[in-house]
Length: 322
Image (cartoon, rainbow, N blue to C red; front, top):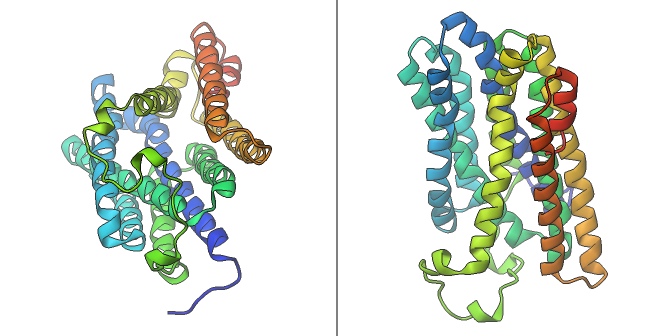
């Protein structure tokens, strides 16, 4: 297999994984946008719209634990390639299944299974391949790439026939899988960067019960839940809300790109600032507390303001900050 040396291995990993997250995020956004014209065409009520949109989550949360448990056995290369292929093929075939809601829901569950496999592998790869002092900016670029994917999908999909969006982004994922096979080489464990592990858990196995009873982990669970609550409300239901309640037409759906543009820019800036604070001898814990607090309090305040808005432009301006 040819070896690519244009970029250092760390930069190559960040670039490839960021591209995968670009595709991952774009594929999530297509259905929430496409379901507006699809609903008009197939006369779905809100009940079935909810099932179609939420089916993704059923697959997504179930496969993440599987991914975390299998990556050490099968390797990052195989699992990530399989994940991208699975969600990309699911995306490509979606337009062929719209005449059967059960088949469409099943396809959405499979899409979630594939996307749920992806991010834990990327996190594992970053944790073992990216130096600690560069890790925040690497995650910043990863998050930014996902937001750019959502921006691109939000701008393109309302302007084309709804099946074309599924074909385009699904095909990009299949193409990425070929590049991943060529450009990423798995390393021996000796070459990996060791994780920063607290002394309390060094030299012993971590029991599964500690993942439930450890209070600092509960802080992470709650913060992640709160962050995803706002993210998924915006991603899954914003196009439908704008169309039904604020009379947005299909072209106006491109305005849903604004939240992802701001998210992309803020992700990069926050990543660099976090690394700079660590280099200035701030503790990693203090930096994480600061960034998490800003990232949750700000979106919460703006979502509360969004509830009181009855103007399309004002609504988009408020919702972009979460």
